[in-house]
Image 1 (tube, rainbow over the protein chains, first blue to last red):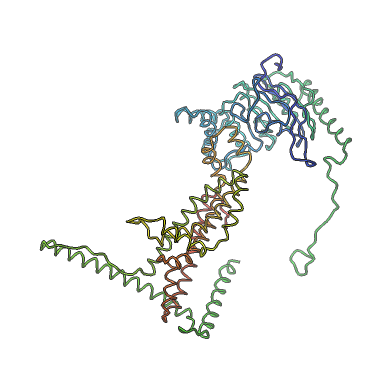
Image 2 (cartoon, rainbow over the protein chains, first blue to last red; image 1 turned 90 degrees about the vertical axis):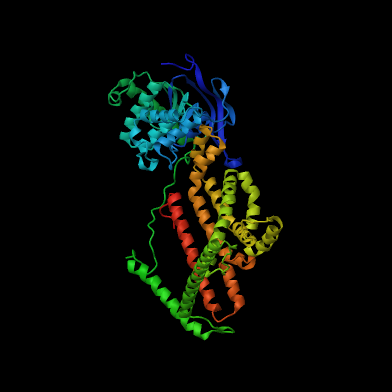
Amino acid sequence: MRTPSEAAQVLALQGVSKGFGEGRARVDVLRDVDFALAEGELVAIVGFSGSGKTTLISLMAGLLSPDSGTVTMDGAPIRGPGPERGVVFQSYALLPWQTALANVRLAVDAVHPEWPRARRREEAERNLALVNLSAARGKRPHELSGGMRQRVAVARALAMDPRILLLDEPLGALDALTRGSLQREIERIWQASRKSVVLVTNDVDEAILLADRILPLTPGPGARLGPEFRVPLQRPRERAALQRDPTFRKLRSEVTGYLLALAADRHREAPEAGLIPPLPALDPVDLRPGRRGTP
Amino acid sequence: MRLERLGLPVLAFAIFLGGWSLAASRVQTPIGALPGPGQVLSAARGLVEEHLAERERARAFAQRMDTEREAALALGTAFRERHYAGRPTYFDQIATSLQTVFMGFLLASLVGVPLGIACGSSPALYTALNPLIQLFRPVSPLAWLPLVMILVSALYTSDEPLFEKSFVSSAITVALCSLWPTVVSTAQGVASIDRDHLNVARVLRLPWHVRVRKIVVPSALPWICSGLRLSLGVGWMVLIAAEMLAQNPGLGKFIWDMFQNGSSETLSQIVVAVFTIGGIGFLLDRSMLALQRVLGRDAHAV
């Protein structure tokens, strides 16, 4: 296990706050967030939906700039997004009118414009093969399953040859079985490429399975990063075996317990927040005479 | 259901024809009664025959030229080539109208799509231009045309003009009136591009021309297509008025000439023109719809 102090920091956030809106409608999404990512490390950020996870990853990517505080890469402040921080978007953001290969090719062409055409094509093919999608190279996103789309998005991010890979709930929209196989694939790709990875997720098991460290994000508004949980499990980690591993189970109950305690606090402080008042049971009836559907 | 879909329009059309022929015999004008469906049909047939006869004359003339040329060659005498100076038939006029509307539509697209993309990608530019767009959008072709004609006469001066001035004026007027749906629709399409797609472009640091080519245009294509379809519809509607005033030898001029003639055939021929204009407008709309379905990736466009 490496920590930011032992290895070189590639990405750091210091006292970062970010809010949206003006005046009374203003919402402080993140307040005073500190974060550091070491070279080659895989850090998972775990939080509830709506706690500001996407805002946090957008700040790391440079797609948003902080209201206060600094975001630095290798010690230098970030000025906007760039391919050295490859993003896998929650929605995948594949171009629907282009094939899987062309989507990856877009990244290769942007990052290596000086390469000859054949080499760029080869590089796109190589990245698609890395996620086991060579057979689907000619398919458009709507012809692919959710898991395959996700893998194209990962291939595109890898094709940028980034130093840091930012994964925004990459498996959030997938069914449990597909999630399982893609988690294994993400671990394999990360171990092969040795890139630094930030993984944002709402799945504690996924975080423990993949990460070196887990940082919980407190529920917004004004979300902060909580205390870190180190994951001292050997790699490769086998999902089935982990279920019986006492370390895994202890860690899971600690992280889950921490998040649930935060949520309970939140409700005690502001009972109306996050709660939807129950609706009266209404059954609409069409009162017009002679209509189909009225008894 | 299928019977309703086919039967009801047929029934409605039959009632329309019946009402028309009943009304026609009762309405008297200084140049005769309003023509019924039968007279209009025979007027249409007359226009087709006239076209065929004119083509026959042109062919005969060309043959005569050939024989004269051969004779002149054989005798070694001078031969002066002459061109057939027939008047344009109804079908020539339709062709002229179509050429004019496509020229205007092309101009409108060449200006409208880039302008729409610029407006859609820059909120500041859209805010700046919106009042101007709203100001010019409702202007009638009849208001633009005299201005355009004067400008064309002043600026489009060439010894061997590629196009007639009347053609250029009509096409520009069509463009000025049909530009706006394309601009507005394209701008809306560009403004509603998926934020994540634009974020991909930002992460990849795509230069603006690549961003436009690879992301903006393909994304907004359904909107661009529906804007172009509206534009062509407006353009075709506007064209007839423009041709009447500009004397561009198309369907508009045909109607105007018939109106000036005041012969017994006038009314039937104008009605034929009305149906022709409607039919061509319908076909243009259908072909744009087909284009919209293919390019716009929208199989359910209506």
